[in-house]
Amino acid sequence: DNEKIEKLQQMIDESNHIVFFGGAGVSTESHIPDFRSTDGLYHQTYKYPPEVMVSHTFYTQHTEEFYDFYKEKMMFLDAKPNKAHLKLAELAGKLSAIVAQNIDGLHQAAGSKNVFELHGSVHRNYCQKCGKFFDVNYVVNAKGVPYCDECGGIIKPDVVLYEEGLDSQTINGAVRAISKADMLIIGGTSLVVYPAAGMIDYFKGKYLAVLNRDATSRDKQADLCITDPIGEVLGRIRV
Image (cartoon, rainbow, N blue to C red; front, side):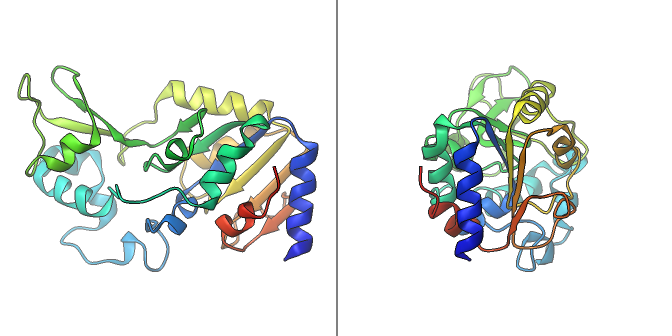
């Protein structure tokens, strides 16, 4: 509703070091399904549950089946940035960082520069043997498992799978940005995935806004909660 949007506008106007902490819900308006919603990946039928198929063990033991699932269900290369991504890029002067749980690279595609990708990105891929870098098209065009064109090693996406730790540099950067922020906007995340969700504890600033379709564990602490689609909400913010 207009009153809430105006309140969000006022908070943004009064802030100079905003951090946006986002999850899958930021990309659903770009037609990328999230894992946990009713039409998300967890509710579709595969021989194995999705959380097993995106685990490190499964990747190691069933690399071919991992890649079948990954290419079909985790790479959305036709997706375009939506109003939320575009507005955040426009807010670059006030927005000191984006902390993203998404792996789709849409924040960068929209023009945002300081993005901490907690769970990696489909756009970066490395040979596990020699470390050579491969772009996303190399992986897409490989039949089945992608192999390095130099040493023949298996190429792995730079995506954090279940059972894998997050990159410590990325975590430290994100925590530093959150702890210095005067406003934190949490958007499109249910805040159930740890350690990512725990980073919010580092926020000591003035305004906390939660833009999410469903209730989250932080709603009680928040100065403002909006449940409308995040692209619509941010799309109405004036820069």
